Image (cartoon, rainbow, N blue to C red; front, top):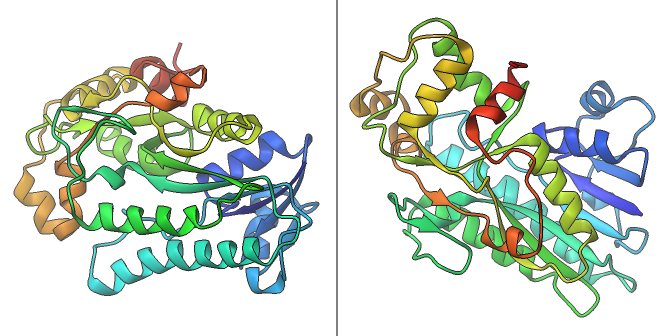
Length: 300
């Protein structure tokens, strides 16, 4: 299979490429070829910009993982624009290439996030059972998905992956969350009651491959483990795995002072369930948080 991947040098893209490189012919879209070579090896096929392509006739599938990190910087209006445009523009370019193709790829797997739902409290949320809270993350993901959906035709099916917090051995959110615990200052954030929907990187990669090979799969899929937990439980479990205390609490007002509007994403949450993935028969390797964290930190 010939696959085009955007965001191939990110956390998920790198792991996905390494899993598939011996099975399929992959092309990575990257503006930084040196970073791609460093992360993925010098034998990779790269395209520096989508504008260099006239169509997608040469590809069997497209996986769209591109996007400015959402939690790396304070959400100024300028940063919000960067977050939006990094997702929307790339997806618009891909859709245009699909429409220019006489033999379009059969699958378009496009990223999204559980931010689509906005804050949800403790009520479980599925793809078909939810009521969105209209805020920045929802508006960002809703338009992102709507753009991607325009690629759907009788020839091309579109899968939208609403990703939760990805847990990995290196990089991503977990390394940042673990640091205060390793220093002995870890603890819940705010009330600790907000729900966290997480997924291990192994399962994230596996589900993308699963959807790639499921000819009947299309529409939105929640990329989250079946067992969301509260921030309090997450913090206590992380502390136990790291053999560190969990006695400090970061007050909500401190988070808001440090992060501004972005703090809402951390202080509120969602209990997102992967209903459609499980209906399709996908099997998670890491269903429980403790074992997932132990794997990330190589604990027995």
